[in-house]
Length: 215
Image (tube, rainbow, N blue to C red):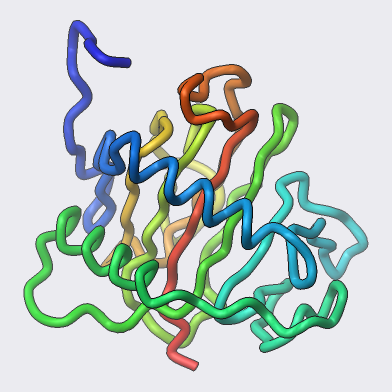
């Protein structure tokens, strides 16, 4: 929205977990969407993730730098076409470090980001409560949203249930979580179809999650 009665403000949702509304401007969103469309093409493109129990994730995914599959990392798409994972671009790592500085104000040098997990949500996609715990590094996780608005449920490190906080993430929003919240459970219980900025030209939601592997 161009104007709101109560403009959205930066919010610390939990210690070390910060929501920054509208962090990416319109041009930044278009540039990132253009890159995501390129990364989604095969080989090593957008895929359906299958869990060890035989289920499937409703959000589809493509990875950069390291390929994530439940619950490990590889240099090839081990659970897909077997192609080498696409490289992680340096500009995306710099975007991640910039995001951490803006959200958390952390001094010093942020470790080099080397993983991107890009999830595409259509109108019916969801993401259950989980922790990002397959990395060897405790560097903050950076999450960027494009397209449709979603309800992002941010919980605690101990349990998938309450206490948690529901946050509305819109296109261009940034969410960073590290420190005591680095292993907090989180998920996406709902996507709101048709809420993407019309000028973006995206139907659905893209979530770009940046991590430091420590591998």
